Image (cartoon, rainbow, N blue to C red; front, side, top):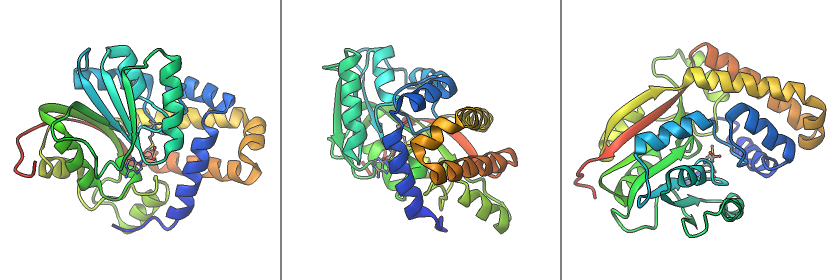
Length: 276
Ligand SMILES: C[S@@+](CC[C@H](N)C(=O)[O-])C[C@H]1O[C@@H](n2cnc3c(N)ncnc32)[C@H](O)[C@@H]1O
């Protein structure tokens, strides 16, 4: 997998972004752009979360696992709107702590559990969950196939998964590929296409939706919001970080508009697998 040369800096930036995501202005912007107010770091919108709930066929009595859950978006929202129970996992505890507070505030105590766990080595019994979801998580980790396999193991056969992921289309020239990698989250580049990885890990695809148009719209809206609140955001992020942030967003928008980057949603059913 060709590395994104900026990976360590990108990871540091991501942690900082998560810390600032709960600042009141950032929450206002998140509400206006994505329709959520959880301190989210994915690009999942409120409409998309509704689509995820339908595709997973969630309802009371179901147990959902949301990996790379950050501070609870969209897992907590799915529990609140469908009546399912949810286990949220991530590696940093900071986001999960915010998720616990939000669950309490939303009256979800008793329906939500959190665990610090690697999505590629989940510490749960096989077949424990009815469904598993993740939002733009596979583009933030290296062992993508291992994560899909681990999710498959903990979901019962016949259970479902829905996830979104940012990816680089195959067949780009090396110059375009390099531009796409530079404008992507740190581990976007993958050795294999997601449909092939899903098949190899015991999942049968039921829906595959290209969300690139929506992603372009959200990225553009985010840029507009950030430019409109530039003075306050400069004070919040610091002059240099904010300038770099705008540059990255503009470059991502350019790459997206040229079709060098895409965002997709996959829905799949867990089929019997010799690996489980
Ligand atoms: C784009 S964020 C999405 C967070 C949250 N679901 C949201 O929508 O705001 C991706 C998340 O994946 C998590 N992550 C990265 N590597 C992981 C791994 N190996 N196992 C579990 N989570 C991981 C990150 O910590 C981060 O919270």
